[in-house]
Image (tube, rainbow, N blue to C red):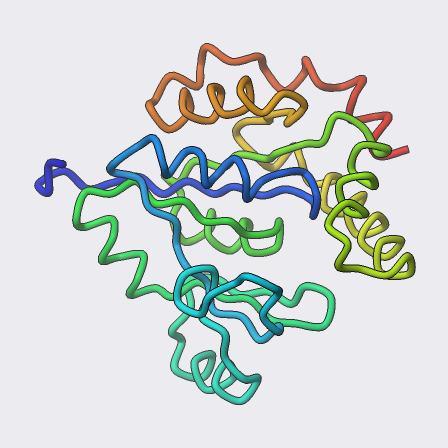
Length: 206
């Protein structure tokens, strides 16, 4: 890693169940100078999650104190919980020459793009609504009511696709991984343009 060269900030968004987390884990396992920003959140830990690895799990009171101190590059409320990205953490990683990935929703992405205009944003789409619902159910963590709410929220999330620089359809994990690596390596211009996904997006949103 060349610490004299500052890294690039990559924003990755997707509806819940699109496979964003799996993609990002593969990328960071294969690219040495690539780090994932660990967000602060007020939501409860899910089975298998580790504080300081998956998220910094904090109380609502601690989160509000950090807001008052303007400690976040971005923050957003998703469902009944808050998520935020620490400014100091991002600045340190970029200064070390790392490419940094932010896994955030469209609200957070808007905030980051306004503050970091040279960031690169990527939206991950599912291949269909049916596949998205199947992936949510396969987790075995949510009730049908929660899944229904997540599906409604997914449509809202996907409606912001055009705000992003790149789109990736996570149908085949290997192909999606290859495309994401290409973007981070600076070869994103080789990928299909957003107009190639018009028909799929219409099916996902309508």
